[in-house]
Amino acid sequence: MAESGNTGGRIDFTGLTEFLSQFDEARDHFLLSQRELLLSFRSVVDIMARVSEKKGGDPSEDNRLNVLLVLRSVMDYIIARTPHPHIDQAVRSKVEALESIVQVLDSERRRLSAVKDDEMVQAKLEAIDAVKRLLLKEIDQAREDLHKPEPRVRKVPIE
Image (tube, rainbow, N blue to C red):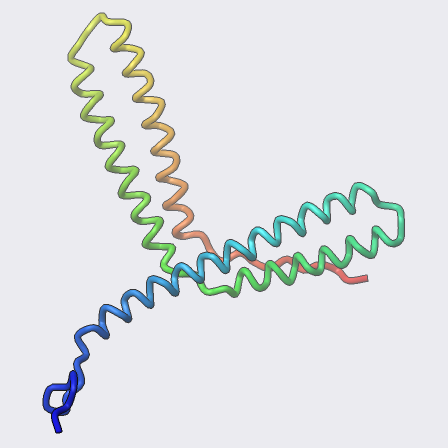
């Protein structure tokens, strides 16, 4: 009897590494979507809590507000404990892309700065400088986000 698809009783593992890398990528997508769902649900809870705070005075509204505050604390706890996918890599990629754009803006500025006494060129230079400042702020913010500690869960008194 001949073995079908099997060479001499050996198992072919060549596709396994590709499968595992795709599985890891899918896992990251699931973690990101889970986190986004939790954050969006917490936003809805925050909106409901603000509405209940404004109505205030009614004991049923006070009870509803307390439940919402506890629910928000639980959501914060779950979000803080949710494993992060490789967000660091995504932020680093964002920083690299923004730095590339800044380099292009710098080269364009050098090219345009050779032209003197032209109002249109001066306006372009001002626009390039404004966009560059904005991108540099975005780069700084992204780098800060990389080193930001995990959010602490806030304690809410239960009455």
